[in-house]
Amino acid sequence: VIVARDKSFLVRERHRRIGRSLSIAYSDAPLKIVGGEGTYLIDEDGTRWLDMVNNVCHVGHCHPRVVRAAQTQLARLNTNSRYLHDSLVEYSRRLAALFPDPLNVCFFVNSGSEANDLAIRLARAYTGNRDIITVDHAYHGHLTSLIDVSPYKFAGKGGEGRPAHVRVAEMPDLYRGRFRYGDESAGRKYAEDVRNQVAALAAEGRRPALFFSEGILGTGGQLTLPAGYLKEAYAHVRAAGGLCLADEVQVGFGRVGSHMWAHETQGVVPDIVTMGKPIGNGHPMAAVVTTEAVAAAFANGMEYFNTFGGNPVSAEIGLAVLDVIRDERLMHHCRVIGDRLMEGARELATRHPIIGDVRGHGLFNGIELVRHRETLEPAASELEAVIAQMKRKHRILLSSEGPHHNVLKIKPPAPFSAEDCDYFLNALDDTLAALSN
Ligand code: PMP
Image 1: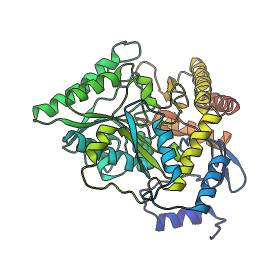
Image 2: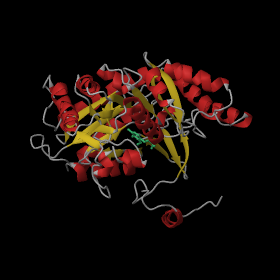
Image 3: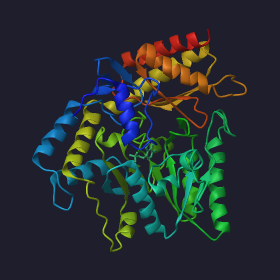
Image 4: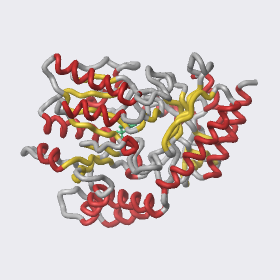
């Protein structure tokens, strides 16, 4: 391997050899990261960067138990899932045990996109319907079938617009949407638009196959859902014969603190759950969990075979991740630190009027910046400056989110400590104070 002393060489070669649609983070001063440990990334000079972006390395960068599990199994055997293997069966039992009945059947794939694509096939096989309802501004994956259900992509730059088989439901935004904090029936009112989409389909003699939603809206701007939203929305979709999917790719595995899965904060049981990112702590694996009935409808004679999905290395890694979440009590930790972070950010809001809203569950949070608390004018360029300064001065890595690019997105590895949290809050205080000077 060539070792480039000069970062501009790597940038130049990437531009030449790697598809240009892939961006580089902090492109004005890109980082060359050569190591990871817990909540920190380490660059080529040995500088440690506090990583508040990476929810994939969920149990911490290079967690020794996960690394050991991968190394051990890779040295022993890696083959496809058509052979009998203890760890695959053990892993499916452990994963299914994290869901209530009737969610008992697992499919193993390699990415969140593959999981969501398979979910569409499952729903179509079960319902006999083709149409899909999705929530505005959502992202569900990079496959053709998922760009189709991702308004974040199809309605944005380079997008080709909403496909005919997809309906978009209004995003339930309690901060700047039609129904806001304090409106006890906001969940029901927002879910009315799911009913409207079902009705619009019915008017054309069609019915939904599947309703897609996350338990907290990521690309929508780290939005927690209004109470009752998913319950009502699911009822409308199911009344028309459709299935309901919870996309837990971003938010699953205890990150929300109170529950293992974000959709549980809404008190619903989906028909299909998709998981990815944190499931393998960075190893490419993903899963779909569904009901016996849905899985049976899909077993129509055509085999579902996935070359890499459920291989013994992935199964061992998946087991190690579940062990670490349990043994290090990471779900509880996410709740305690997430509450500390949001409480601290709300205290900052009393002194920094630019903070319009602080929200989240556990360690999946958004801090929304506005120029005026009345008009809610998004402070997007200000947020960009904040992120740049947090990196430059405090060595903290952060990103922005939301349709207006004015939401500070927070989703660090779960072991993010009380000290990390306080360091972040002090740095944000310092940065916002400098901003208003
Ligand atoms: N669903 C959601 C909610 C996601 O955030 C993502 C990835 N950002 C995906 C699906 C797709 O996952 P992957 O990139 O692993 O295909």
